[in-house]
Image 1 (spheres, rainbow, N blue to C red):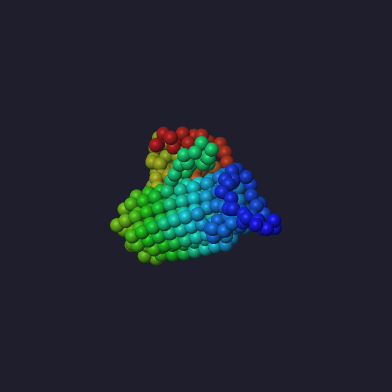
Image 2: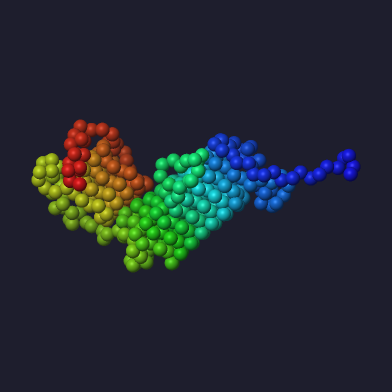
Length: 354
């Protein structure tokens, strides 16, 4: 062998990156090694990362097929048309990221978070989005382990055969979303917009759509699905007596009248301006486009309520429970929030009533 001839370099084994913050240069080098791995070329190595931070980076168009990004952060990243087929993304976080056109076919996305993410046209066919738990002392998940698409955009997204049991789609825009043959049992759609989704063969038993907005013929399609559906729309006249009873209940500190309970009711577009709704039960209530200007909602229970486009100008919201409520396009000018005198008494009233 000539002294100038050298043996070809052998592929390196995969190196696991743990708890590091990647920059653009290190990401490019990682992608090149993974590209060589996928092509079985010299110098290739499978991308394996655990609890790493890739927030804000540009991963658009990259092919990460068969990679592993366990409990990694992609918050605010550009992932347009990125490919993650068969990838392990258990516990990954994609909050506020752009995933339009991304491909997650048969990816492991258990416990992944997609809050406020744009998944327009994304492909998640056969993806696993169930709850999960990491059995590894060196890796931990923050908070709960349920997958979430809260307030995400999934227009034209495809999730055929996806495993979405107990997934949270609260406040999501689901226009033309393909859920054919998907498992959506126990899934949560509080405040979500379902506009002509494809639900052929989907399992929806015990899915919660009580405060969802159903457009097109989707309501008809869901009639015998076993899902909890929104109630018929109520007008102000239908609840007038209940409002009067509630005013007496608040004024007497629970000794007279009756607490207002409109949980799960459909009050779309109703005019409740200036009304006393303090400590009322309005959880999972549809208040889409409702007029709540100057309404007193102190200590009101509004968990999972749909307040999209509602007028809350100068409303009293101190002590109100707005967890998981959809406030998209709601007008919140001059609302009052925080602590207030008498709030403890209202909360005591609620505890006594429950």
